[in-house]
Length: 288
Image (cartoon, rainbow, N blue to C red):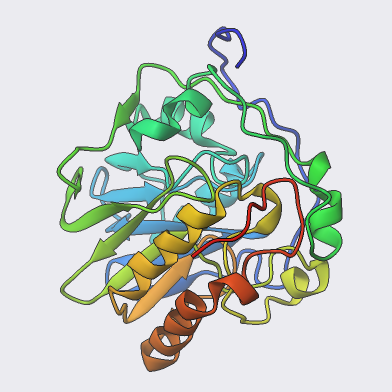
C-alpha cells in the first residue's frame, strides 16, 4: 500500500514500443459497436460517435494513444465527438493509458468496479508483473511493464450495484475478477454480444510472435498480470455460460458464432491445463 498521490494531469506511463499487424485496423462488430486495436490492445466504441454524447468508450488503450483515438473518430465519422462516459474493464496500464487525458479533454465521467478503485485513485499499486511465470518472451519482459496506480479526478464513479451500465440500457456488467480484483465484462443479451476485457483473450498474450501476428487462439487472461487463478477460472465459466454470439477481448481478434462458444466452453473445461501456468509467483494449486 502506498501513500495517496497528488492528482496528476497526465497518465504517468511512458510510451511502450510494442505493436501488432492489426494496429489501427478497426472492425465494425455490430451496428453500434466498433473495435479499434491500438498497438496490442483493443478498445471499443458503443453507440453513434457521429453525434456528440451519443456513444460510450470502453477502455482507453496504451499510453500516448489519444491521437490514435482522435484519428479513428475523424477518419470514420468526420469529426471528434465527446462520449457520454468512459467505461473501464480494469485499470492495468494498457487499458487506462489515456483515461486521464481523455476524461479531462471531454469532461467525461469514468466508471469502474468498486474493487478497482484503489488502483485508479493512487491508493495502491498493482502487484508487480511476474517475469518468472511460464510463458513466452512477453512474459519474460513483463517486469518492465508499469504497475503503478493512476490518480483520476472527481470524474471517477463506481458502476451501479444492480449490474446496469450507465447510458447503455440494454447492456449489463458482470464482475469477472482474477486478472484484477475489480475486472468487469460487458454483455448485451438480445444479440449476445460480449466485451470480455482480459477475463479471457483470443491470442497468446505472453508470446511475442503470436501478439505480433495476432493468430487467433482462445486463451486465459494474460499470465504475467493475473494474480488470482481460481477467480479467473470462475470468471471464464461465468462468461462461457452466457453462450455469446460475439466476443471482443482486450487482446486479439474478435471471435464469432459457434466457434467462439465451443472454444470458450473448452477453455472453461480445460482451464487448469490450458490457462494456468505450471509455475509462477501467483500460481497456487490445486484449483478446481
